[in-house]
Image (cartoon, rainbow, N blue to C red; front, top):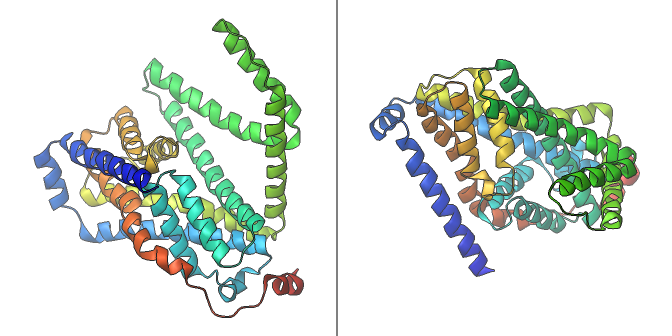
Length: 360
């Protein structure tokens, strides 16, 4: 475990050092230093505040998902030990762990699971809360990605390769939404469609499809059951509460994108708001792929490539790295400081069954 942790730390430090040393050389060292020296301190502080609001949005969403799973009224979360301050610490710690520990997002989920178990939540309730939070946040990101790709296509001025890639990404994003709903309704047609597509592709390559239909069907049925449990979890809350959770999921990404926009303004790099938002959506989705911890390197490369398509110069590398200081690097040391505080138990509190009896 120690060897794996050390290897991951060395890899993360190496990639991060390469990104933060090489990318500023794109516009030139002197120009980069000039942009940094002229940065507006109030706007940099505003960018940091936007990132804090992003974390607060996620913390509030996770807290409400836990309250729904445990049958606790949202206004009584603090009495049960899941107040806003605790949820913010848990969010920042999980975020930092996903950036620094082996496993990425799985490591962050493990940190959250351990901390919530320490607060007395059952395994199933923790799973439902984390699944609901992930479904809402990544569902919101999927909507942002679809809008970003559509803007890229509508804006035009793309070469055939870029247009094909954008069209394929937009189609896959829509297909993921439709496919998820189709699995929830009836997994059998989805299984047949997947097998038919795989068979056609393998025939083109001169190969045959191995007999894995039963395993695929079992996987789809399990996914259907999990989606059903997730739907029941989200439908168990009042419509106004479900709406708040959706707004918080969107707010998580909105404030994070606002941090990027403000960093461009703070450093005086000229870029349109719509172009930045589109590049942000595409790069953030690419950064969620399990290629590097926290998408380090993947996010930076993708957003700069998309900005080039919009005609935004190499100076964009400097505010992008400034944004990543708040978005990626800052949670890592904060996680090390806050992690021990997650395991301090709150004072005496009523059992969960009491809350469920009184407020069900």
